[in-house]
Image 1 (cartoon, rainbow, N blue to C red):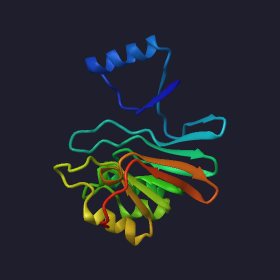
Image 2: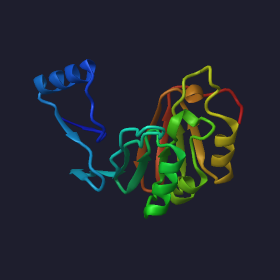
Image 3: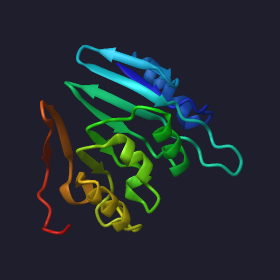
Image 4: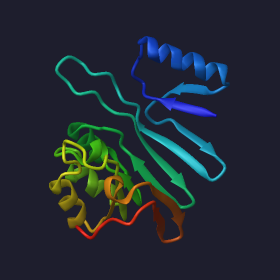
Length: 181
């Protein structure tokens, strides 16, 4: 059992208690490092950006990982802000057949450069049903649709399960949404 945490230093009492509980349960906790790769039989987790604490006046960088499983890849960009997404897009190979859309599909959640670099077949937006912010926003959904990406939304589809298949991902959801976009 392993937890990979962002490189950001934590000092809160809650965090210290979480670390104590992890140790009591024999769970290994490792700080992420950019370029780190962890492999299990049939599964590889690559840390593309370890994240960083926010400097004064700057947005923190998120932990960004790519998971490779059975010939498919899923990019998990955390809550990466737009400038981090653009830097990732310019940094090299980000190709993944699935994308977890950052920041619940907020107005600046997905940079076009990141989407072009990833080239996913399917994207998952994790947003609460009826959330007060209206996430995901139409602009993000339009960006995904314009790129031909099949988009699944937890606010409409419920739990989304992706299972790797030879030609992409098999998708299962816990509910069928009402016809919309």
